[in-house]
Amino acid sequence: MYKGVIIDLDGVVWRGEKPLKNNIEAIKKLEKSGLKIIYLSNNATRSRIEYVYKIRRYGLKASEKNVINSAFAAAQYIVENGGSNIFIIGEAGLYYECTKAGLLPVTIGTPAQHVLVGLDRFVTYNKLLYATELIRNGAKFIAANTDKTFPVENRLDPGAGSIVAFLEASTGKKPDAIIGKPNPWILDLALRMNGLSRKDVLIVGDRLDTDILLGINCGADTLLVLTGVNSIEDIEKTGINPKYVAKDLLSFINDYPELFGL
Amino acid sequence: MYKGVIIDLDGVVWRGEKPLKNNIEAIKKLEKSGLKIIYLSNNATRSRIEYVYKIRRYGLKASEKNVINSAFAAAQYIVENGGSNIFIIGEAGLYYECTKAGLLPVTIGTPAQHVLVGLDRFVTYNKLLYATELIRNGAKFIAANTDKTFPVENRLDPGAGSIVAFLEASTGKKPDAIIGKPNPWILDLALRMNGLSRKDVLIVGDRLDTDILLGINCGADTLLVLTGVNSIEDIEKTGINPKYVAKDLLSFINDYPELFGL
Image (cartoon, rainbow over all chains, first blue to last red; front, side, top):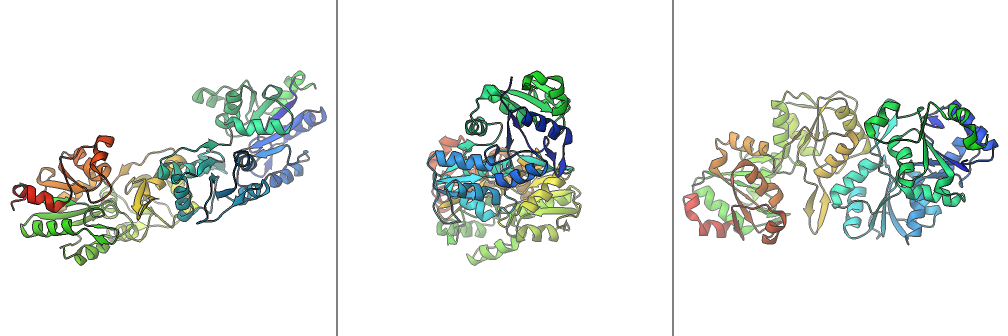
């Protein structure tokens, strides 16, 4: 029986602004049964608190303890690795989480020991130039995530991973750390904050290359729900195999109530 | 005996704003002996005419016929491949050469059959987003050059190749064509415009990975001058072997006057 469920946001709780009702109904049942619900998102542009408010709007329980995104996780990683001055390529949420974590985001020209890269839709050449110079001179190169694109309506827009690709070319270096899914650090942080271990949880997500691969990389159980990006056909195409597949979380907990003590 | 000499600009004729006197003196001697002098630069941010004026300031002969850069060459390539509307990520020189070549540079939102990418120090996310969308929808992806960095004083700044890396990540595609050195197209264009063939010329440059590799790729003779980026030690490191090496062009033509009919 699972003690907790790790839930992706976009494609599981909502798609854009549209709530995914069957998944939300299932999460409410799991909340009532006493399972720990942890929301885990690769998005680094927003602070956790923005997500807390959005999740609560759908009648779900949320706090900064059970809502973890790559902005927060990257800030924690850098703090735990002795960070102080940090040069950020990113948006408001990344600045917020780094500041709250005790780091000092600096502007162009000020020395920094870490360069943290997330999606930045206001990125300029001068920001990339200064990040290049810092990394070439020995600053640690940290990627909040390496998602090359993210879905927006019926388009795929460039993500943090495309900015990381620019900096890999300009510096000749790979990131010293990648924080977001499918890398273990963000999961282990979320588990540690909630008193759980990898074996205690089921990871629920709509993406094979982030959510499901995270579970595989960590030896944690996974459920692919077909309410977002990936379809059953994609499993064969990618070779990334979830433990379970279901059309949504509600049908899954109805089929396997015993896994959740329901 | 050579009929023409292909000369790189930065690192051969000047370094930044500093003229390289021995190389310039040698070029003047070659001009007097009747050899065709062709200047070939990977820089796509300026128009040829900007270079013509700069080259003339050092007392050398220059016109838009013997000064070829990747901005002009890319525009020619696209014209010869049926281009009309073009979306440019680049600076003033790239817009100028495309316009003079008869192409129509369009802004965000207007359909285009080609996306042309050069160094753009004013690049924004919205430009990259629109380029991504066009390329994903079938527009040809043309790189003026893929130089990942370029030397500026004692720094290496991000070049067109870093922007190309971003778009490779965001589109999942490689460029359909790369115009600049070390790719043959720019050399063949320069030769064609001046009535020469690959066997007629000596390529003179300071960079192994562009100038010298161009000669190797095209079966043309090459001379590495040690007045710019690369040193003799770099030859072994890179495995890129020029036919000749000299400290500068003047010492080379003094040692081998017969190659130039001097």
